Length: 182
Image (cartoon, rainbow, N blue to C red; front, top):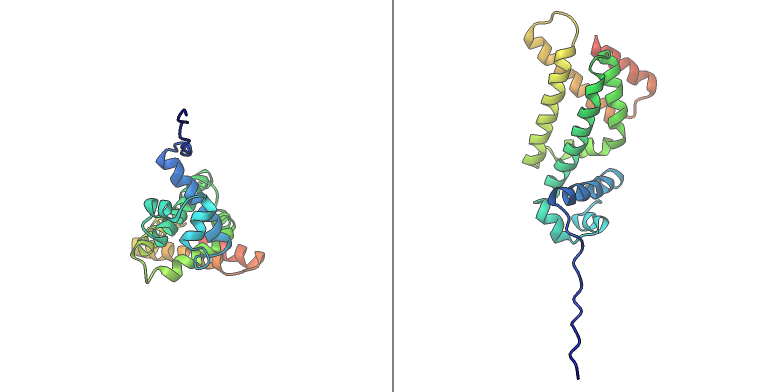
C-alpha cells in the first residue's frame, strides 16, 4: 500500500514585524477606546487581532506598554496633522486639538489614572506634556519672561487635557481656547 503524503497545515502568510505590530496596535486601539482599559484584557485584544495572547506578549511586555504604544500612535498621527495648522491662530489650533482628541478621551483619562502606577505611562505622559508645552510656548503671544512662558505653556497643556476629558459645551470650549491663546 502506497504511503500518502502527510498533510501539514500551512502557516499563515509571513508578515513583516512592523506590519504585524501595526495590526496589533489597530486592534488594541479599537478596544481600548470603545471598551476602556479595564475591559480590554490582553486576551480580548489578542482575540480581536486574530492572534494568540502569547503573540501579543511577544510584541508588548504588558498592557501598559501596549497602552503607551497606542497612545503614541495617536499622538504621532495628531502631530503630523497638526503640522499643517502651525500658521493658524493658537486658539484655532487648540480648538482643533480638542476636537481631534475628544473621541479618545478615555485613553487620556486612562493615562492619567495609570500615571502613578506605571513608569512607562508616566514617562509617556511627561513626554506628551513636553511636546505640547514646546508647541504652545513657541506660539504664545507677546513678550513674556521665559519662566512665565513655560508656566503659561504648561497651563495651556493642562487646559487642553481638561477640555478633552470634560464634556464642555461648544461655547465654553471656544472661550477656553481663546483665553488660553491670549
